[in-house]
Image (tube, rainbow, N blue to C red):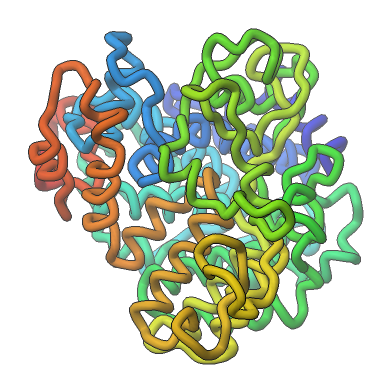
Length: 525
């Protein structure tokens, strides 16, 4: 699939994508000039896949940097980009924050590309449901693939946006620049209704093919199972655990997806789109402009070519807590996820390792970025089953993930916290209460999904964001936050984390350029 999909991405990058995702109003281009057949529609869809790269570029700043996993690595830097990252990290940003605007506008650019494609496929979202009027020159199967995949991409973007910004603009049609400025925000409820409808329709039209039977040329495209997995996460976010459980059980029993044998195999560039990956944003090295930037972005500064060619930027700097959260002290009984996720270039320069691979050109790595994988499916099922009170099955699901990472059964002969064990069924280290279960599950998600842009969303969903972040500031203050320029006291820093500021500000430019409506800013900004 990387050969086919990314070849198409290259074609789009060199030719037709500019007319799909260029910021100039699409309504200025004749609608009838596009997508006369499956080949043209598939090229447009490839542009939508390609359009996922731009918001993902700085998504880590909206998620991991605002959690207890990541820091801005040069505390006392006066460089503007570093100051902007400190503002995100410390919840001190304002509505004119450049990185927030970039994420916002790049996401809406790709939503617009998807909307344009769906409109050409005869799909409209009206009054809470999809209205279908097929007018494309292609087979039913071809139409279903285009529509099912496009609906997933739109749902993916809106799911991220509504969790990060709250009430947002819900746009489902190509935008008319003459009327767009009269549109107000939509409620979170309306946006979630769209997300659910898009994913349910995607599930309906995409075939439920087992992973082992997916043609190799199609690996990497959105599947029936990816849409079910995303829908399960949406349902968990909305506290609809039984609905989530139904989706997760379908995936576990019928999809053919499974855990990779070893944790490091999941992220190997020689094993991409393995059976654990339900969906990933794909990259291709080779100087085509389609490579992953994260190897260089996350490699330590001043490392030359010791970690990756052409040095690193030292971003997404692991916290001291992140470096110590894995059990690594024992010679054999240790958590193997540490070596796959993290490494140390020098005592003061740890870095995120999981996206590093050999490269020739800066910001041009091969590594895909996982969005949905089977370990997450198991942990989501544990959440759906055990959140309101643990049971044997929910604990065993956590243990299954731990066992793959190297945990062995606890025999009581040594300190449970000193080595890496599965959770026992009885005794002081068993998960025997709701609070213990939540803590264990949230911790396991932190260990398993580290630096996959999940941690902030998990903390918010579990209702643990404010207390966790305040403790994080306290833990990291002596070595990091005390060195921030201008100085900020620990108490002032902790006071910045409020329920309101868990949401990002609506970009100021979005408000000030809209002269037909008086748009409200998110509270706290």
